[in-house]
Image 1 (cartoon, helix red, strand yellow):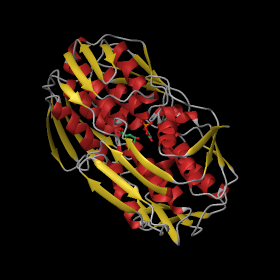
Image 2: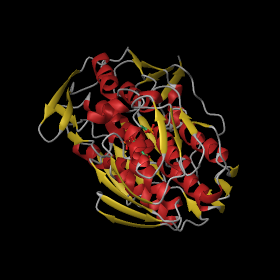
Image 3: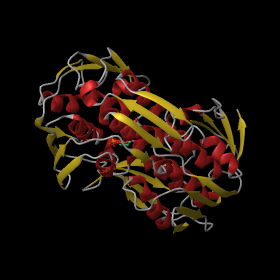
Length: 434
Ligand SMILES: O=C(O)C1=C[C@@H](OP(=O)(O)O)[C@@H](O)[C@H](O)C1
Ligand SMILES: C=C(OP(=O)(O)O)C(=O)O
């Protein structure tokens, strides 16, 4: 990962935003491609990988499990012994990556000796126990003090069938599917209460690209048979990272993001519809998506059950909008890199925007935002709460403000998008180290 401009404290000044950026590679796909290549064995090429804090944690994990990776810029060459030949490692540091933590927990259960999984930041407050219970159904022993990491697993996991309560994270199911692709006899999984569903489609897409056979009944039952083989795989653009750039265009000018696939199952492509509902002009032509301000933003209602990562930036759109916006199905936001319900309310209250929580039948927890129908006051210091997506949303609030704002800590964007502040600069945003 070459060095990026990542100040701890950044001053964002309001002003017009204009230009074009390339979508960074997808974090979700990169995690999955590295792990599929590890289990497939042989030599795989992963083109256009994302190198960010999270994906480097997965890279270190696959190397500790026996892969050797040469990364020459935009292509990573991964040579691996395959699922039956993994190396034992006593511990794996998942850093702050929930995806790494859950997916690697399942892969490590292929080994017959205990592997400790731990992390940093808020990772020890992010749940994993339902995945451990599902792995126990496959003969995996585990030690865990409570809901969350640190925990250890000891396989070898057996082929067969298990069930998982997936409410806390779709990553539990993605982890089991990846494990199943590495088991000679495959795996059958029954699923309850799954949210963030499209991420499971991302997992299935990568596993099938690497040769696995996946049968399913909707999102309630899956059977994975192995068959992974070394593959040349190209990682697509990241909709979750493109979303704040598109929102910047909707708020303050016109931004085009290239390298996106509108047909990709990534859930955060839903940002297109929300921006349109909020009154922005959005054009999709091939792999280029452009969002343009029309000078006024309207209130909107969005259920983020399947696209939780959009929540912080939706708050940044709702704050200057005219009317009462609702960001609903928000219950699971408390389980992310921050308690994103509290973090979003903090951003809004510091922007002197009226915001409250409400329970709506069928929509769960809603963050209700009475927009200011115009620019935010600015002249405030926003806390990112140590959360990359909250930092990006705070920057957007700066673009919608009368006066400059401070964002701190700002370097947390490195978790998913190390080049975020440089990309904003490239779009004409005035940024200064605080
Ligand atoms: O599988 C993935 O790549 C992800 C799944 C989502 O988590 P949940 O399934 O826990 O909502 C999302 O928040 C995260 O950024 C990435
Ligand atoms: C929650 C996120 O990722 P993870 O679950 O992998 O930490 C995110 O990228 O917003």
